[in-house]
Amino acid sequence: MNSLTTATLLKWDAQHYGTGFAHVDDQHHELFDGLNSLTLFLQNASAANDPENQDKVIELLYFLGEYVIRHFQEEEEIFAKCGHPLADANKEAHQVFYEKYFEYNDKLISGTFSLELLQQLHSFLHSWLINHILKIDMTLHEYAEKSGIDCRSSAGKKGVFAKFLALFQMK
Ligand SMILES: [Fe+2]
Ligand SMILES: [Fe+2]
Image 1 (cartoon, rainbow, N blue to C red):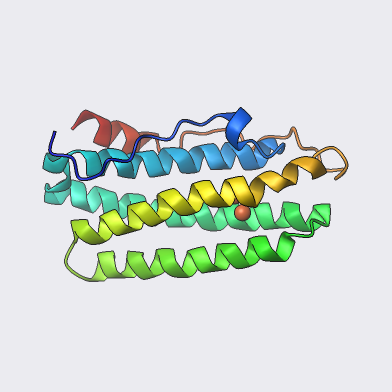
Image 2 (image 1 turned 60 degrees about the vertical axis):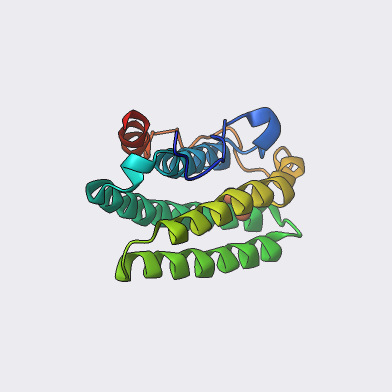
């Protein structure tokens, strides 16, 4: 395989990535699917060089950006309601992410499509997401029971990235 990325697909596992809040976990699981869609796209050179697929990947990036915005807002509300000492740090990390993500996105959308740039964005997304969940989001755990929030109420995993996963898996 003429692989453009060596990254492996992320497997959601509550044991390793769970925050104790089902709502947040469902959204993180969706984000894994979004990132995995991008990994699949980049793992297949023939798919990645097809202009029709490149349009689809731009659609995926747009979709992912929208989903991330919603997730960050909802997660920040939970941090605030818990009175979590890292609430501001979480918010600031999200802000840094936004700026970087949309900087990449703008370049990819407005200019000529660049696989190199997409690979850079992929590496950034991959390391940022894992690091952020492990270092900040998972600290929510100790607040799950004492927060008074129903931490079992779920966003319900809806498979929002299923169409992209299917699309890039089959190529
Ligand atoms: Fe976060
Ligand atoms: Fe998060």
